[in-house]
Image (cartoon, helix red, strand yellow):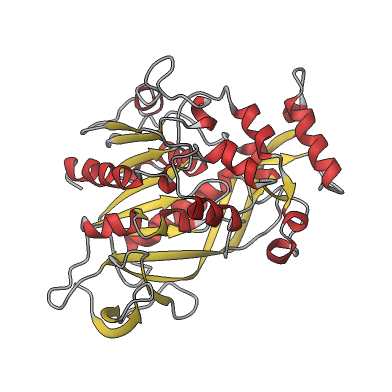
Length: 398
């Protein structure tokens, strides 16, 4: 049981609402900001969390910062050339990276009334993909896994990955790579299990990822199988046949030139998708989304790094020791993993668990959201995804 005081906040512009306020605010560098989720179902505490971590899995990349946008475009041209050996030529040995990184995180609880105040045993640890930040999971009223999870009795933990949003933006080539991000996630999970955040211990952790966040989730299950009790992969499949088309479609742009007001201080190692058309091609399926949410996603588009690009799938390996249940969810018209049709030549969710989680147990499941593109959380019908994920956990006793 947690100890609470009372606080009054405004719920999405509505009337003032009195909600319980945690008296233990440990783990955040300063007093965390108290807010409600988009639909008002969860009470959330957000702020910077210092994560001390060492990884031995990064790659020494023989690659210098591009001088300008022309150089960036040429790098991707080289990568996409049919006879390309770019990645092999740049890849050096494994590298060790250590540091303390400030990660902006949000821990949300179901909106509870006094009494009783009971900590949910299970926290959903949700990792966003490229092009988004943690708001992907709490995007708008009706488009929020944070809300849906709270209504189902779950806590949620979301965060801006390293190099994204309000988290630190260190060296974009040698530091912000996929393996280091896996170890940061591992450290955060240990904090949640150990009660280092808000004095609240969680006995169960269900990891959920979107796209690159799903790749991260696989890396965690493979390297740290004891961290998690269930895996939920969204926006993910086994096929890489459209990856070249995806990065061509991204039309990668220097973040500091494309969005100077937001990213002007970043190095030339930080990139964004080049245009709204880039985001539509790779993330959205017309007309199955709200135009206002599309504009919101494009206006708030987030960075990715050359380090991530060159180490994207390095952490992917079969999680042979993970024995929990696995859920695989994708939009029917996902472009990145299915080239627009996840039912061709057959259900693309079906082989994932067997290939990557050979010892998975419990009630594993799959779901394809009709009419949705890659960013399925911001398409019509997203609530069906959230309900499916929460039911998957319930069906496995979590």
